[in-house]
Image 1 (cartoon, rainbow over the protein chains, first blue to last red):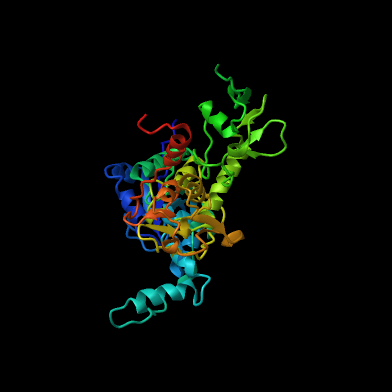
Image 2: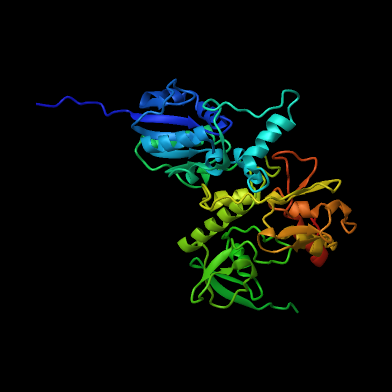
Length: 193
Length: 243
């Protein structure tokens, strides 16, 4: 007597967008027709480009994280996704190094600090009219004083730098993980800018 | 009668090689067809051993030595890529990134930057050191060129290029520790330094986007690090580029 074969559960896959330009997600979408294969191989449980789910779910196997940690919402989601994911990938230069969002850290040590300086510049000094600081507690998340790369906030399992990482590299990375292998390493997997 | 220059034999990564007795270990490595990463080294300029990327292990020698400023010796046994050296190299590159403000995404040298290249070569996928975000400035006082101190790694290639090849000695190194920076003239705005001939050789020598031509925007810099060697050969050996 044979037991009926139960298909193995699909890998639960998430992508997250923190403080970044969404370019890494655009590069992810550049996977084009391979996205069909990916969609067949995984269950997409959370993603700004492939799902409508608003709450980061439990029991995620693999999570790609674009963007730096720049505000209170980013921080909350980063801690949540780490607690609920087996494998976390720092996805693109903003997650890896804080990149452009981190530039305001240059003002972290000066009078007023980085948060005050960037808001003053963006919403007051450069305003044509109606200059005011954004203030909507509970709706507009507060900026953190220092923008941090993801690995300075939570433990990160793999790094995929690039601005953005190319679709070919994202595919090579995901294909290895889907096969249950460690992701490819070496110079072909690395770029900055 | 042809003068025979003394030579020495050494071994690099198990490979025997013979070079002139006054050659550096870096020259020997390259003559054997091997490679170590470098940043502060530029053929045609005096080596200074500043960046520490070309550190090599010498058997029987208690410490690591920079290949660019170490002279070969008979029977020397050199290793260029031990796990220890590879670890230190990656650490050195991470420190370069953490120490300055290197944001490749909108840098003038993106795609033509030796620091970017070396990060890939040593396998740096992130910096384990927290970024310092030093508050530096941009000197845009020169009519043709700019100096963005945020991107400077203090390799001193510009200092040596201007002093040894152009003979103007516009550049030098000022201040100490984390405040250390390249200075123009007597720490003046570059555009006010009368000694500058506006030749642009410092821009050609710069390995990053620190020195740039003002007309170049993001990823448009086209450095010419080979010019130091070409001009040095022209001057000392009377060998010109088209010969």
